[in-house]
Length: 570
Image 1: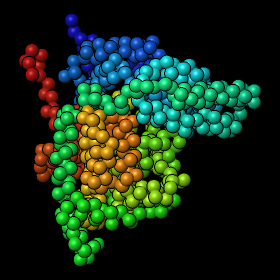
Image 2: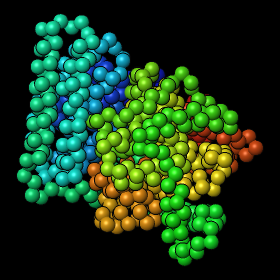
Image 3: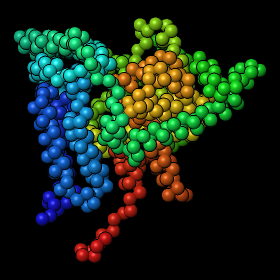
Image 4: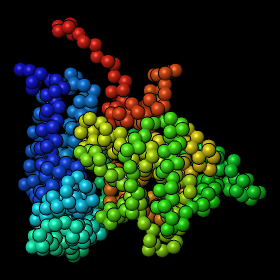
Protein backbone atom coordinates (compact mmCIF):
# COMPACT_ATOMS: atom_id res chain seq x y z
CA UNK A 1 0.00 0.00 0.00
CA UNK A 2 1.25 3.49 -0.84
CA UNK A 3 2.12 5.89 1.97
CA UNK A 4 -0.39 8.60 2.84
CA UNK A 5 -1.78 10.37 -0.20
CA UNK A 6 1.25 9.95 -2.37
CA UNK A 7 4.13 11.52 -0.48
CA UNK A 8 3.87 14.99 -1.90
CA UNK A 9 4.63 18.42 -0.54
CA UNK A 10 1.03 19.63 -0.51
CA UNK A 11 -0.06 16.75 1.73
CA UNK A 12 2.89 17.36 4.02
CA UNK A 13 2.11 21.05 4.37
CA UNK A 14 -1.50 20.31 5.27
CA UNK A 15 -0.28 17.83 7.88
CA UNK A 16 2.17 20.44 9.23
CA UNK A 17 -0.64 22.94 9.85
CA UNK A 18 -2.73 20.35 11.70
CA UNK A 19 0.32 19.25 13.67
CA UNK A 20 1.08 22.80 14.85
CA UNK A 21 -2.47 23.54 15.92
CA UNK A 22 -2.58 20.27 17.90
CA UNK A 23 0.84 21.03 19.35
CA UNK A 24 -0.30 24.45 20.60
CA UNK A 25 -3.43 22.97 22.11
CA UNK A 26 -1.12 20.72 24.14
CA UNK A 27 1.15 23.67 25.04
CA UNK A 28 -0.98 26.82 25.40
CA UNK A 29 1.72 28.72 27.34
CA UNK A 30 4.29 28.11 24.61
CA UNK A 31 1.62 29.07 22.05
CA UNK A 32 1.17 32.49 23.67
CA UNK A 33 4.93 33.05 23.64
CA UNK A 34 5.06 32.08 19.95
CA UNK A 35 2.34 34.60 19.11
CA UNK A 36 -0.34 31.95 18.49
CA UNK A 37 -3.25 33.29 20.52
CA UNK A 38 -6.04 30.79 19.92
CA UNK A 39 -5.45 29.13 23.31
CA UNK A 40 -4.61 32.19 25.45
CA UNK A 41 -7.44 31.44 27.87
CA UNK A 42 -6.09 27.95 28.67
CA UNK A 43 -3.28 26.61 30.83
CA UNK A 44 -2.14 22.98 30.98
CA UNK A 45 -2.08 21.61 34.53
CA UNK A 46 1.22 19.67 34.81
CA UNK A 47 -0.37 16.43 36.03
CA UNK A 48 0.38 12.74 35.35
CA UNK A 49 -2.59 12.72 32.98
CA UNK A 50 -1.41 15.66 30.90
CA UNK A 51 2.04 14.05 30.69
CA UNK A 52 0.53 10.78 29.44
CA UNK A 53 -1.42 12.82 26.90
CA UNK A 54 1.78 14.55 25.74
CA UNK A 55 3.59 11.22 25.32
CA UNK A 56 0.64 9.83 23.37
CA UNK A 57 0.62 12.96 21.21
CA UNK A 58 4.31 12.52 20.34
CA UNK A 59 3.79 8.85 19.42
CA UNK A 60 0.82 9.62 17.17
CA UNK A 61 2.82 12.35 15.38
CA UNK A 62 5.84 10.06 14.95
CA UNK A 63 3.53 7.54 13.32
CA UNK A 64 2.12 10.21 10.97
CA UNK A 65 5.62 11.45 10.09
CA UNK A 66 6.78 7.93 9.23
CA UNK A 67 4.18 7.73 6.46
CA UNK A 68 5.87 10.39 4.34
CA UNK A 69 8.68 9.42 2.01
CA UNK A 70 11.19 12.06 3.00
CA UNK A 71 13.17 11.71 -0.24
CA UNK A 72 10.24 13.01 -2.30
CA UNK A 73 9.82 16.22 -0.28
CA UNK A 74 11.28 19.64 -1.14
CA UNK A 75 14.42 20.77 0.73
CA UNK A 76 12.39 23.05 3.01
CA UNK A 77 9.90 20.30 3.87
CA UNK A 78 12.67 17.73 4.33
CA UNK A 79 14.22 19.98 6.99
CA UNK A 80 10.81 20.51 8.64
CA UNK A 81 10.15 16.75 8.69
CA UNK A 82 13.45 16.07 10.42
CA UNK A 83 12.98 18.92 12.89
CA UNK A 84 9.47 17.72 13.80
CA UNK A 85 10.72 14.18 14.23
CA UNK A 86 13.58 15.35 16.46
CA UNK A 87 11.16 17.45 18.52
CA UNK A 88 8.77 14.53 19.08
CA UNK A 89 11.56 12.07 19.93
CA UNK A 90 13.12 14.63 22.26
CA UNK A 91 9.79 15.35 23.95
CA UNK A 92 9.24 11.65 24.58
CA UNK A 93 12.77 11.16 25.91
CA UNK A 94 12.49 14.17 28.23
CA UNK A 95 9.18 13.04 29.71
CA UNK A 96 10.00 9.34 30.03
CA UNK A 97 13.75 9.39 30.80
CA UNK A 98 14.96 12.81 31.93
CA UNK A 99 11.85 13.54 34.05
CA UNK A 100 12.74 17.11 34.83
CA UNK A 101 9.22 17.64 36.16
CA UNK A 102 10.31 15.75 39.30
CA UNK A 103 13.51 17.63 40.05
CA UNK A 104 13.29 21.10 38.48
CA UNK A 105 10.96 23.42 40.43
CA UNK A 106 11.91 26.29 38.06
CA UNK A 107 10.16 24.49 35.19
CA UNK A 108 6.90 25.54 36.89
CA UNK A 109 6.35 29.21 36.12
CA UNK A 110 3.35 30.80 34.42
CA UNK A 111 4.45 34.42 34.51
CA UNK A 112 6.22 35.03 31.19
CA UNK A 113 3.20 34.02 29.10
CA UNK A 114 1.01 36.38 31.13
CA UNK A 115 3.56 39.14 30.51
CA UNK A 116 3.28 38.60 26.74
CA UNK A 117 -0.47 39.25 26.94
CA UNK A 118 0.16 42.63 28.56
CA UNK A 119 3.16 43.84 26.56
CA UNK A 120 2.37 42.65 23.02
CA UNK A 121 -0.27 44.55 21.13
CA UNK A 122 -1.66 41.65 19.04
CA UNK A 123 -5.33 42.27 19.95
CA UNK A 124 -7.38 45.02 21.64
CA UNK A 125 -6.38 45.44 25.30
CA UNK A 126 -9.80 44.40 26.64
CA UNK A 127 -9.70 41.15 24.69
CA UNK A 128 -6.18 40.38 25.97
CA UNK A 129 -7.16 41.15 29.57
CA UNK A 130 -10.19 38.85 29.36
CA UNK A 131 -7.96 35.99 28.13
CA UNK A 132 -5.56 36.86 30.96
CA UNK A 133 -8.48 36.62 33.39
CA UNK A 134 -9.61 33.24 32.02
CA UNK A 135 -6.10 31.78 32.11
CA UNK A 136 -5.65 32.93 35.73
CA UNK A 137 -8.43 30.56 36.82
CA UNK A 138 -6.01 27.63 36.27
CA UNK A 139 -3.13 29.10 38.27
CA UNK A 140 -3.99 27.68 41.75
CA UNK A 141 -4.46 24.13 40.35
CA UNK A 142 -1.25 24.50 38.29
CA UNK A 143 0.93 25.26 41.32
CA UNK A 144 -0.81 22.69 43.55
CA UNK A 145 0.00 20.03 40.97
CA UNK A 146 3.59 21.30 40.71
CA UNK A 147 4.00 20.73 44.45
CA UNK A 148 2.76 17.15 44.04
CA UNK A 149 5.15 16.33 41.20
CA UNK A 150 8.39 17.35 42.90
CA UNK A 151 10.61 14.62 44.38
CA UNK A 152 14.05 15.44 45.85
CA UNK A 153 14.48 18.49 43.62
CA UNK A 154 17.83 20.10 42.79
CA UNK A 155 18.59 22.75 45.45
CA UNK A 156 19.99 25.29 42.96
CA UNK A 157 16.86 24.99 40.79
CA UNK A 158 14.66 25.32 43.88
CA UNK A 159 16.34 28.64 44.71
CA UNK A 160 15.97 29.79 41.10
CA UNK A 161 12.26 28.88 41.11
CA UNK A 162 11.66 30.94 44.27
CA UNK A 163 13.50 33.96 42.81
CA UNK A 164 11.90 33.88 39.38
CA UNK A 165 8.35 33.28 40.57
CA UNK A 166 8.51 36.00 43.23
CA UNK A 167 10.35 38.47 40.97
CA UNK A 168 7.69 38.15 38.33
CA UNK A 169 4.67 38.56 40.64
CA UNK A 170 4.22 42.23 39.71
CA UNK A 171 2.94 41.15 36.25
CA UNK A 172 -0.17 39.72 37.91
CA UNK A 173 -0.58 41.79 41.06
CA UNK A 174 0.38 45.22 39.65
CA UNK A 175 0.73 45.40 35.83
CA UNK A 176 -2.63 43.68 35.27
CA UNK A 177 -4.40 46.20 37.54
CA UNK A 178 -2.63 49.11 35.80
CA UNK A 179 -3.75 47.79 32.41
CA UNK A 180 -7.36 47.42 33.57
CA UNK A 181 -7.46 51.13 34.44
CA UNK A 182 -6.88 51.94 30.77
CA UNK A 183 -10.03 50.09 29.66
CA UNK A 184 -13.79 50.64 29.71
CA UNK A 185 -14.46 47.29 31.35
CA UNK A 186 -17.29 47.92 33.88
CA UNK A 187 -16.23 48.40 37.51
CA UNK A 188 -18.04 45.32 38.80
CA UNK A 189 -16.28 43.13 36.22
CA UNK A 190 -12.94 44.77 37.01
CA UNK A 191 -13.37 43.95 40.71
CA UNK A 192 -14.04 40.32 39.80
CA UNK A 193 -10.91 40.28 37.64
CA UNK A 194 -8.80 41.80 40.40
CA UNK A 195 -10.11 39.25 42.91
CA UNK A 196 -8.94 36.47 40.65
CA UNK A 197 -5.55 38.17 40.26
CA UNK A 198 -5.21 38.16 44.07
CA UNK A 199 -6.02 34.43 44.19
CA UNK A 200 -3.45 33.73 41.45
CA UNK A 201 -0.83 35.86 43.25
CA UNK A 202 -1.49 33.97 46.49
CA UNK A 203 -1.03 30.65 44.67
CA UNK A 204 2.37 31.73 43.34
CA UNK A 205 3.45 33.00 46.77
CA UNK A 206 2.26 29.73 48.32
CA UNK A 207 4.43 27.79 45.85
CA UNK A 208 7.48 29.84 46.86
CA UNK A 209 6.64 29.29 50.56
CA UNK A 210 6.22 25.56 49.92
CA UNK A 211 9.64 25.40 48.22
CA UNK A 212 11.33 27.31 51.05
CA UNK A 213 9.85 24.95 53.66
CA UNK A 214 10.20 21.71 51.67
CA UNK A 215 12.09 18.97 53.50
CA UNK A 216 14.70 17.81 51.03
CA UNK A 217 17.39 15.72 52.71
CA UNK A 218 18.55 13.99 49.53
CA UNK A 219 18.33 16.58 46.75
CA UNK A 220 19.20 15.40 43.26
CA UNK A 221 22.55 16.74 42.05
CA UNK A 222 22.26 19.49 39.46
CA UNK A 223 24.77 17.54 37.34
CA UNK A 224 23.03 15.67 34.52
CA UNK A 225 25.54 12.83 34.21
CA UNK A 226 27.25 11.69 30.98
CA UNK A 227 24.48 9.55 29.48
CA UNK A 228 21.68 12.09 30.00
CA UNK A 229 24.01 14.82 28.81
CA UNK A 230 24.83 13.12 25.48
CA UNK A 231 21.14 12.45 24.82
CA UNK A 232 20.03 15.97 25.68
CA UNK A 233 22.83 17.34 23.49
CA UNK A 234 21.64 15.15 20.61
CA UNK A 235 18.05 16.47 20.77
CA UNK A 236 18.73 20.09 21.73
CA UNK A 237 21.79 20.86 19.61
CA UNK A 238 21.35 18.48 16.64
CA UNK A 239 25.04 18.80 15.81
CA UNK A 240 27.08 16.72 13.39
CA UNK A 241 29.15 15.29 16.22
CA UNK A 242 28.63 14.16 19.82
CA UNK A 243 28.97 16.25 22.98
CA UNK A 244 32.29 14.52 23.71
CA UNK A 245 33.63 15.41 20.22
CA UNK A 246 32.51 19.02 20.67
CA UNK A 247 34.32 19.14 24.02
CA UNK A 248 37.52 17.76 22.42
CA UNK A 249 37.36 20.37 19.62
CA UNK A 250 36.78 23.14 22.18
CA UNK A 251 39.89 22.07 24.11
CA UNK A 252 41.94 22.37 20.89
CA UNK A 253 40.41 25.75 20.08
CA UNK A 254 41.31 27.02 23.56
CA UNK A 255 44.98 26.15 22.93
CA UNK A 256 45.08 27.88 19.55
CA UNK A 257 43.38 31.02 20.94
CA UNK A 258 45.98 31.18 23.72
CA UNK A 259 48.75 31.06 21.08
CA UNK A 260 47.19 33.92 19.04
CA UNK A 261 46.52 36.00 22.17
CA UNK A 262 50.12 35.62 23.32
CA UNK A 263 51.38 36.90 19.93
CA UNK A 264 49.19 40.04 20.07
CA UNK A 265 49.96 40.71 23.75
CA UNK A 266 53.72 40.56 23.04
CA UNK A 267 53.32 43.14 20.27
CA UNK A 268 51.16 45.44 22.41
CA UNK A 269 53.27 45.14 25.58
CA UNK A 270 55.68 48.09 24.98
CA UNK A 271 52.74 50.40 24.06
CA UNK A 272 51.03 49.84 27.42
CA UNK A 273 53.85 48.77 29.77
CA UNK A 274 56.94 50.52 28.35
CA UNK A 275 60.06 48.80 29.59
CA UNK A 276 58.35 46.83 32.35
CA UNK A 277 59.57 43.19 32.08
CA UNK A 278 57.15 40.80 30.44
CA UNK A 279 55.96 37.84 32.60
CA UNK A 280 57.52 34.53 31.56
CA UNK A 281 54.14 32.77 31.87
CA UNK A 282 52.24 33.62 28.68
CA UNK A 283 48.78 33.32 30.32
CA UNK A 284 49.89 35.78 32.98
CA UNK A 285 51.16 38.18 30.31
CA UNK A 286 47.84 37.95 28.36
CA UNK A 287 45.97 38.45 31.64
CA UNK A 288 47.85 41.64 32.49
CA UNK A 289 47.32 42.97 28.97
CA UNK A 290 43.58 42.29 29.08
CA UNK A 291 43.33 43.73 32.57
CA UNK A 292 44.88 47.00 31.42
CA UNK A 293 42.58 47.25 28.37
CA UNK A 294 39.53 46.42 30.54
CA UNK A 295 39.92 49.61 32.54
CA UNK A 296 38.33 51.48 29.60
CA UNK A 297 34.60 51.19 30.28
CA UNK A 298 31.43 53.25 30.69
CA UNK A 299 30.01 54.46 34.01
CA UNK A 300 27.40 52.15 35.64
CA UNK A 301 24.46 54.42 34.84
CA UNK A 302 25.55 54.90 31.20
CA UNK A 303 25.53 51.19 30.29
CA UNK A 304 22.16 51.13 28.50
CA UNK A 305 22.75 54.49 26.76
CA UNK A 306 26.11 53.29 25.43
CA UNK A 307 24.38 50.27 23.88
CA UNK A 308 21.74 52.45 22.22
CA UNK A 309 24.37 54.76 20.72
CA UNK A 310 26.35 51.94 19.12
CA UNK A 311 23.56 50.27 17.14
CA UNK A 312 23.35 52.84 14.28
CA UNK A 313 27.15 52.58 13.84
CA UNK A 314 26.93 48.81 13.34
CA UNK A 315 24.14 49.23 10.80
CA UNK A 316 26.18 51.79 8.85
CA UNK A 317 29.26 49.53 8.81
CA UNK A 318 27.30 46.56 7.42
CA UNK A 319 25.87 48.73 4.64
CA UNK A 320 29.28 50.17 3.75
CA UNK A 321 30.91 46.73 3.59
CA UNK A 322 27.87 45.12 1.91
CA UNK A 323 27.84 42.13 4.28
CA UNK A 324 24.09 41.59 4.48
CA UNK A 325 20.77 43.25 3.61
CA UNK A 326 19.15 44.75 6.73
CA UNK A 327 15.44 45.45 7.06
CA UNK A 328 14.90 49.04 8.34
CA UNK A 329 11.19 48.41 8.98
CA UNK A 330 11.84 46.12 11.95
CA UNK A 331 12.82 48.33 14.91
CA UNK A 332 14.86 47.12 17.86
CA UNK A 333 13.70 48.41 21.27
CA UNK A 334 16.36 48.64 23.98
CA UNK A 335 14.78 48.23 27.43
CA UNK A 336 15.64 47.43 31.05
CA UNK A 337 15.50 43.67 31.63
CA UNK A 338 12.08 42.66 33.09
CA UNK A 339 12.03 41.21 36.64
CA UNK A 340 10.80 37.73 35.67
CA UNK A 341 13.90 37.26 33.47
CA UNK A 342 16.39 38.33 36.10
CA UNK A 343 19.27 36.17 37.20
CA UNK A 344 20.39 34.32 34.06
CA UNK A 345 22.12 36.72 31.62
CA UNK A 346 23.06 40.40 31.59
CA UNK A 347 21.89 41.16 28.06
CA UNK A 348 19.54 39.27 25.79
CA UNK A 349 17.14 39.56 22.88
CA UNK A 350 13.40 38.82 23.08
CA UNK A 351 11.93 38.52 19.61
CA UNK A 352 8.26 38.46 18.67
CA UNK A 353 6.81 34.98 18.27
CA UNK A 354 6.83 33.51 14.76
CA UNK A 355 3.09 34.24 14.41
CA UNK A 356 3.51 37.84 15.48
CA UNK A 357 5.49 39.21 12.55
CA UNK A 358 4.91 42.85 13.49
CA UNK A 359 5.73 42.59 17.21
CA UNK A 360 8.62 44.42 18.85
CA UNK A 361 12.07 42.92 19.22
CA UNK A 362 13.50 43.87 22.62
CA UNK A 363 17.14 44.15 23.61
CA UNK A 364 16.96 43.48 27.38
CA UNK A 365 19.74 45.13 29.36
CA UNK A 366 20.35 44.19 33.00
CA UNK A 367 20.37 47.21 35.30
CA UNK A 368 23.34 47.82 37.62
CA UNK A 369 21.27 49.97 39.99
CA UNK A 370 21.76 48.93 43.60
CA UNK A 371 24.91 46.90 42.88
CA UNK A 372 27.82 47.26 45.28
CA UNK A 373 30.53 49.45 43.63
CA UNK A 374 33.08 46.58 43.53
CA UNK A 375 30.60 44.23 41.85
CA UNK A 376 29.55 46.87 39.31
CA UNK A 377 33.20 47.66 38.54
CA UNK A 378 33.95 43.97 37.97
CA UNK A 379 30.95 43.65 35.63
CA UNK A 380 31.88 46.78 33.67
CA UNK A 381 35.50 45.69 33.30
CA UNK A 382 34.12 42.50 31.74
CA UNK A 383 31.89 44.55 29.39
CA UNK A 384 34.56 47.16 28.68
CA UNK A 385 34.59 49.52 25.67
CA UNK A 386 35.87 46.80 23.32
CA UNK A 387 33.68 43.93 24.54
CA UNK A 388 30.56 46.09 24.66
CA UNK A 389 30.83 46.56 20.88
CA UNK A 390 31.24 42.81 20.39
CA UNK A 391 28.27 42.18 22.69
CA UNK A 392 26.14 44.46 20.48
CA UNK A 393 27.28 42.66 17.32
CA UNK A 394 26.36 39.35 18.99
CA UNK A 395 23.02 40.31 20.52
CA UNK A 396 21.81 42.79 17.93
CA UNK A 397 23.35 43.69 14.58
CA UNK A 398 24.14 41.54 12.63
CA UNK A 399 23.74 38.87 15.34
CA UNK A 400 20.54 37.65 17.02
CA UNK A 401 18.27 40.51 16.08
CA UNK A 402 19.19 40.34 12.38
CA UNK A 403 18.99 36.54 12.25
CA UNK A 404 15.55 36.60 13.86
CA UNK A 405 14.28 39.16 11.35
CA UNK A 406 15.38 36.78 8.57
CA UNK A 407 13.92 33.77 10.40
CA UNK A 408 10.56 35.50 10.64
CA UNK A 409 10.52 35.80 6.84
CA UNK A 410 10.97 32.07 6.43
CA UNK A 411 7.68 30.67 5.13
CA UNK A 412 8.10 27.56 7.30
CA UNK A 413 6.56 27.90 10.73
CA UNK A 414 8.26 24.75 12.04
CA UNK A 415 11.75 26.26 11.67
CA UNK A 416 10.70 29.27 13.73
CA UNK A 417 8.75 27.33 16.33
CA UNK A 418 11.46 24.71 16.92
CA UNK A 419 14.35 27.08 16.18
CA UNK A 420 17.73 25.44 16.64
CA UNK A 421 19.72 27.04 19.48
CA UNK A 422 23.15 26.17 18.04
CA UNK A 423 22.29 27.80 14.71
CA UNK A 424 20.90 30.89 16.46
CA UNK A 425 23.80 31.30 18.93
CA UNK A 426 26.37 30.09 16.39
CA UNK A 427 25.30 32.75 13.92
CA UNK A 428 25.74 35.47 16.56
CA UNK A 429 29.29 34.27 17.34
CA UNK A 430 30.13 33.83 13.64
CA UNK A 431 29.10 37.45 12.91
CA UNK A 432 31.55 38.79 15.52
CA UNK A 433 34.47 37.29 13.61
CA UNK A 434 32.94 38.30 10.27
CA UNK A 435 32.68 41.97 11.37
CA UNK A 436 36.27 42.05 12.65
CA UNK A 437 37.56 40.33 9.50
CA UNK A 438 35.78 43.03 7.47
CA UNK A 439 37.73 45.69 9.36
CA UNK A 440 35.31 46.67 12.13
CA UNK A 441 37.22 48.43 14.91
CA UNK A 442 39.84 49.69 12.39
CA UNK A 443 41.76 46.41 12.58
CA UNK A 444 43.10 47.48 16.01
CA UNK A 445 45.09 44.67 17.65
CA UNK A 446 43.39 45.58 20.96
CA UNK A 447 39.99 44.83 19.42
CA UNK A 448 41.19 41.50 18.01
CA UNK A 449 42.72 40.50 21.35
CA UNK A 450 39.47 41.32 23.14
CA UNK A 451 37.47 39.36 20.57
CA UNK A 452 39.73 36.36 21.17
CA UNK A 453 38.97 36.75 24.86
CA UNK A 454 35.25 36.94 24.07
CA UNK A 455 35.45 33.93 21.73
CA UNK A 456 37.26 32.08 24.49
CA UNK A 457 34.08 32.59 26.50
CA UNK A 458 32.04 30.56 23.94
CA UNK A 459 34.76 27.92 23.86
CA UNK A 460 35.01 27.72 27.65
CA UNK A 461 31.20 27.66 27.95
CA UNK A 462 31.28 24.37 26.04
CA UNK A 463 34.22 23.01 28.06
CA UNK A 464 32.64 24.08 31.36
CA UNK A 465 29.19 22.69 30.61
CA UNK A 466 30.47 19.28 29.53
CA UNK A 467 33.06 19.08 32.33
CA UNK A 468 30.56 20.02 35.04
CA UNK A 469 27.62 17.90 33.89
CA UNK A 470 29.39 14.89 32.38
CA UNK A 471 32.63 14.63 34.34
CA UNK A 472 32.17 16.22 37.75
CA UNK A 473 34.27 19.41 37.51
CA UNK A 474 34.18 21.23 40.87
CA UNK A 475 33.27 24.86 41.45
CA UNK A 476 36.89 25.68 42.36
CA UNK A 477 38.20 24.10 39.13
CA UNK A 478 35.55 25.91 37.10
CA UNK A 479 36.25 29.35 38.59
CA UNK A 480 40.00 28.81 38.13
CA UNK A 481 39.56 27.91 34.45
CA UNK A 482 37.26 30.89 33.81
CA UNK A 483 39.42 33.49 35.58
CA UNK A 484 42.90 32.14 34.76
CA UNK A 485 42.46 30.57 31.31
CA UNK A 486 39.49 32.57 29.95
CA UNK A 487 40.56 35.85 31.65
CA UNK A 488 37.10 36.51 33.04
CA UNK A 489 36.33 38.86 35.91
CA UNK A 490 35.33 37.24 39.19
CA UNK A 491 31.71 38.50 38.85
CA UNK A 492 31.45 36.95 35.36
CA UNK A 493 32.92 33.62 36.53
CA UNK A 494 30.59 33.49 39.56
CA UNK A 495 27.61 34.23 37.29
CA UNK A 496 28.68 31.49 34.89
CA UNK A 497 28.92 28.96 37.71
CA UNK A 498 25.38 29.88 38.75
CA UNK A 499 24.24 29.45 35.17
CA UNK A 500 25.86 26.03 34.68
CA UNK A 501 24.23 24.87 37.91
CA UNK A 502 20.72 25.81 36.72
CA UNK A 503 20.98 24.90 33.01
CA UNK A 504 22.56 22.18 30.89
CA UNK A 505 23.64 21.79 27.24
CA UNK A 506 22.53 25.33 26.26
CA UNK A 507 26.00 26.69 27.07
CA UNK A 508 27.51 24.47 24.34
CA UNK A 509 25.32 25.97 21.61
CA UNK A 510 27.57 29.04 21.05
CA UNK A 511 30.76 27.18 20.23
CA UNK A 512 29.10 24.23 18.47
CA UNK A 513 27.18 26.55 16.15
CA UNK A 514 30.17 28.84 15.53
CA UNK A 515 32.37 25.87 14.62
CA UNK A 516 29.80 24.35 12.24
CA UNK A 517 28.92 27.65 10.48
CA UNK A 518 32.58 28.58 10.04
CA UNK A 519 33.32 25.14 8.57
CA UNK A 520 30.27 25.41 6.29
CA UNK A 521 31.29 28.88 5.10
CA UNK A 522 34.81 27.64 4.24
CA UNK A 523 33.44 24.63 2.36
CA UNK A 524 30.98 26.86 0.46
CA UNK A 525 33.75 29.31 -0.44
CA UNK A 526 35.83 26.45 -1.83
CA UNK A 527 32.90 25.08 -3.83
CA UNK A 528 32.00 28.50 -5.32
CA UNK A 529 35.57 29.44 -6.24
CA UNK A 530 35.64 32.78 -8.13
CA UNK A 531 31.86 33.13 -7.83
CA UNK A 532 32.02 33.29 -4.00
CA UNK A 533 30.49 36.36 -2.34
CA UNK A 534 30.26 36.63 1.46
CA UNK A 535 26.95 38.52 1.34
CA UNK A 536 25.44 35.82 -0.86
CA UNK A 537 26.57 33.08 1.54
CA UNK A 538 25.17 34.95 4.56
CA UNK A 539 21.79 35.52 2.96
CA UNK A 540 21.52 32.02 1.53
CA UNK A 541 22.40 30.55 4.93
CA UNK A 542 19.90 32.75 6.80
CA UNK A 543 17.24 32.03 4.19
CA UNK A 544 16.74 28.52 5.56
CA UNK A 545 15.40 29.88 8.86
CA UNK A 546 16.52 28.69 12.31
CA UNK A 547 17.24 25.12 11.21
CA UNK A 548 20.05 22.86 12.49
CA UNK A 549 23.28 23.70 10.64
CA UNK A 550 23.84 20.12 9.50
CA UNK A 551 20.44 20.19 7.72
CA UNK A 552 21.17 23.59 6.13
CA UNK A 553 24.50 22.19 4.95
CA UNK A 554 22.81 19.18 3.37
CA UNK A 555 20.36 21.46 1.55
CA UNK A 556 23.08 23.87 0.36
CA UNK A 557 25.21 21.06 -1.03
CA UNK A 558 22.34 18.91 -2.32
CA UNK A 559 22.59 17.84 -5.93
CA UNK A 560 19.50 19.13 -7.76
CA UNK A 561 17.10 16.28 -8.53
CA UNK A 562 16.71 15.27 -12.17
CA UNK A 563 13.24 13.99 -13.02
CA UNK A 564 13.39 10.45 -14.32
CA UNK A 565 10.74 8.51 -16.18
CA UNK A 566 8.83 5.95 -14.10
CA UNK A 567 10.58 2.64 -14.06
CA UNK A 568 14.03 3.99 -14.94
CA UNK A 569 15.27 4.07 -11.38
CA UNK A 570 17.17 7.22 -10.34
